[in-house]
Length: 139
Image (tube, rainbow, N blue to C red; front, side, top):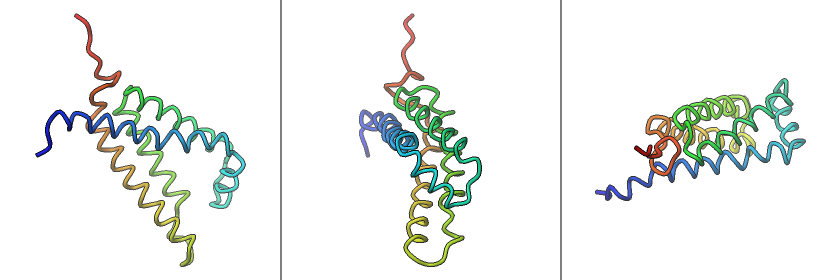
């Protein structure tokens, strides 16, 4: 059995790890904009500037909210939806011929499904300790 004091740290740790996961790619959408435009175009994406900026804003804003533990249930649910959409559109391994690219996209797709599962679990669990959502209100 895992001590309760330790399990209290699991939710905030999960929140912080997921925040880093979304912060870095979110920032890269702005710092490596042209590379992302090319990648999205190679997958037949439309309205690329709009969706690239939108996904970057959601990822960076969502990461900030997860770091702070603010509106975690909603933010985790929104990030799970974004992860699903990105996976279906950008990691469409089922449309590719056998080879390295298909293998790479298959791995990314199923990695994202694991991340989505973690986000859905976090959406259910809430922010946990050390969060704006669970701050103690002075009486």
